[in-house]
Image (cartoon, rainbow over all chains, first blue to last red; front, side, top):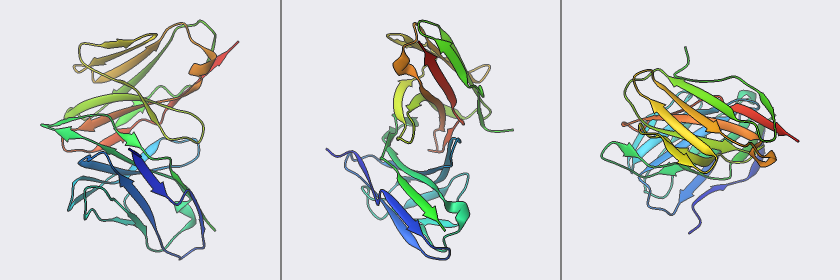
Length: 115
Length: 109
């Protein structure tokens, strides 16, 4: 049981490049989340998904896209990288039923530097 | 106004001290509440769930006050290993999750 895995662990991008951050969970959780955390700040929600085929915007969705074609995978796409997207990105998953959510489990994070 | 606001900190306390953190939330539709601990440059890890009846886990006690829309975390007999950033998170039943900015605790010998 690997939990939540994220790849890559670290990446340097040039301005204007694109990339996909991968996130996979093997706990059969229905909810999945993408956050970014800038230095000295809290976690900001980018996108979330309450099940396969369903995604919703969080607090800071601009510049990102997501898809949820399977329960296990929730990739985050950056189309035109900008220096403001330099951050640590965390993926998380949880189980929810009847309006009650259990705890979120986090992946180890992807550190992204845009130059 | 932020949806979730935490004590700004930082808190610097001696070993053995009792320290309390508060977190207020503005969305009355919030349903689930948790405290997480985050060590430097690592992923957040669950510390405690928070229930209306209050819950205790060893030296840690969490409380929820729905009427006043705040949650609290009390740490008794602080240890050096408690030094970390503590994050509160509030979730609606629609799945939206909002974290506070975190409160940094440093426990000194």
